[in-house]
Image (cartoon, rainbow over all chains, first blue to last red; front, top):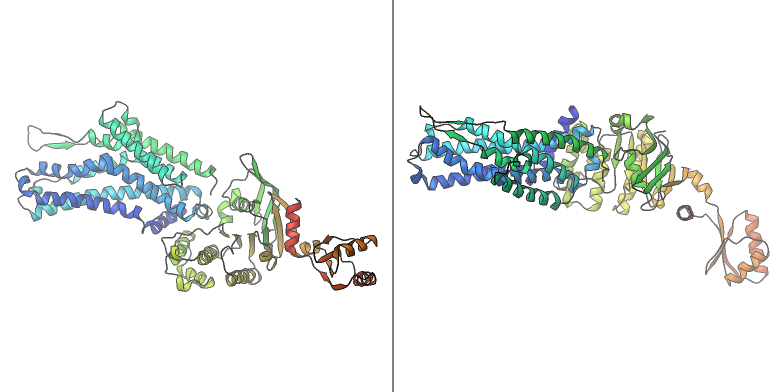
Length: 267
Length: 299
C-alpha cells in the first residue's frame, strides 16, 4: 500500500508540468467559458426562459460536446500522456527496478489516469454551476436563481465518468504497450468514431462496445418528465447496462494488463 | 558472494542471448563485466535486476534468491542501464527529488549526490538541456541516491569526456575502498575497466569466456620480445632455423615469446653474428586489450 501511495505521488510530481495534466483542467475551463460568453452575449433572447429550461439549455451543449467527442478524446490523450512520460524518458526500466511491487507501480499509474479524468469531470460540474450562477448575477434577467441543477449535474457527470472506464482501460493498455504515438491515438480515434456511429444509429448491441458508452450514457437521459403536478423533475438511471459493461471491461483489461506487464520484457 | 548466478540461460525467441552464465561477484570488488557490443551484457544486467524473468538457472544476490526476495534485494541496489533514464521536462534536481520520494529519502540526500557528481550548479536546469555527459552524471547520481550496497552500472562512462571518466573511476574506487560497496560495471572497453577493476568477467555471444581477478587475467598475458631489425623476414627465418619460436612478424618487428634475460641476449647475439643489425630489442607485456580481443575472437 505504501508503495502504491509513493508511486501515485510520484505520478503527480512527474506530470504536473505536462500537457496531459493541464488538459484535464484547461478543457473544462475553456469549454464552460465559451458557453458562458455565448450566453452572456445572447442573454436578451434567453431572458423569457424559466430557470429549469435555462439551466438545461446552458448545460446541454457542454454535456453534448463532451459526451460525444471530447471526453473520449481526453481519455485517449490522458492515457497516452501518463505512459508516454516513461516511454520518452526511457524510465520503464527504473520504475520496475524500484524496491516497490510491480502491481503498485502499475496500478498507481492507472489510478492516476483515472483520477485525472475524474478531476476533469468534477471541474465540469464546478465550472458549469459557477459560471451559471455568475451569469445569473451579472444578468439578473436570466432566471438561473430559480432552479438548481447541481444534483443532476453531479449524477450526469458521474455517469459519464463510469461510462469512460472501458475506454480508459483499453487506451491505457495500448499506450503502455506501444511506444509510438500513432498506434494508441489512431486506434482510439477510429474506435471513437465507430462508437459514435453505432450509438447514434441506435444499434442494439452498441452497449457492448466501450467507445459507444459515453454517447449511450447521455442518450438514455435526461428524460425530464413534466409532471402535471408542480415542479418538473429529472430522473437519472445511473446503472444502465452499458455502465455495467464498462465496469466489467475495465476490470478485465486492468487485470489482464497487469499480467502482460509482468511477462513483458522491459525495454 | 554478492552476486551469484548458476546456469543462467536466456532466450529471445529462438536466439539464446545468455548461455549458462555463472557469475561470481565477491563483496567489496569492482567487477568489470566485459564484452563486445551485443555480447549479452545488458540482458544479463536486466536479469540481475529482475526486469527480465529468469528462464533457466538461478540468481542469488546478497545470498538471497532474487525472485522471492525482489523488493528486499532491489532496495540495496542502485543501477544505471544503458542511456540514463531521465525525465527531460523536469530539472536535474526534480529528477532526483522524484526518486527520493519513491525511495523515501530525505531531500538533503539529493543535494549530497548533486555535489558528488558536480551537478550542483546545473541542478535547476531542465534535464533536456543537459549535455550527454551531464545526463550520464545525473544517471550516476540517481544510482547513488539510496546509498546502495551494490551498484550495477551499464556502460556508465558513455559520453563522458576524459576528465569525467577519471572522476567516475575515482568515485567508484572510493566507494569500494572507503564505504565497502560492491560495483558491477559493464563495458566494451577493457582499457577503462583495467584501471579500476579488481575482478573481471569476459562475455561473448552470451558465454562467459573468462572470470577471475585482474591478476589472473594479467597472468594469462605472456610477455614477448619485440625485435626491430633490418630484413625482418630473413631474420625471422634464421631464428626459426635455430629452433626459436617466432610468434608474430610485422613489417618492422619480430615477436618471440619471452623466457629469460639470457635468452633475449642470445637472440640478440645470434642476429648480430649473422649480420642482421638489431635496431632495438625489448621485453613487451602483451596488453590486456589484445588479450581481450584474442579471448573474444577465438571463441
